[in-house]
Image 1 (cartoon, rainbow, N blue to C red):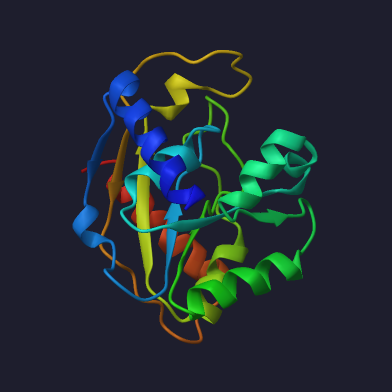
Image 2: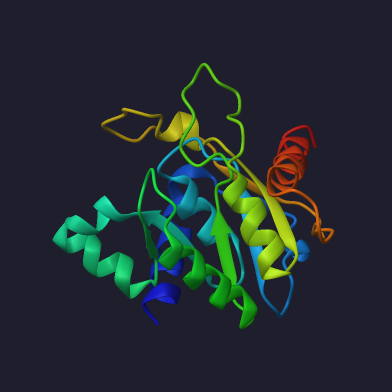
Length: 196
């Protein structure tokens, strides 16, 4: 309930203030588990991706965000998975795998962190390749634009500019591929969406 309410409120705000646009919604599977993989340039990316996706999505967020009482309550209410930074968090990985295997959606940012303005993209981490391979579910690439202008790294306030999300066609992962190779393939599909 909290997720749907939050999504509705955020969607209204995005449309009102950021001329929010979504393309490729038809590429989101109607049922079954999947991984949603997007580029990462701003704290607004999860808000944009979650609002754009017609199905509820589980996100992973660094565990220190859960230290703030109000934010902690909301993150738990919308079922965000806490993730330890700079360590292999087996609990978060197992939780993510359980969710996609039971037919739910998991959103990941293959770059692992927000890029700075000078970098167009960061190299993807192998973790997304691992989850895609072990989860045995399709991956939907997504490209977010405008969030880096609306709320760049180190920004203290929002800038009103157009934000858009484009979903690509699902990627089916071949068994036995190295995890880094899978991550690179996913990232290549995300980059391709920026040129459409």
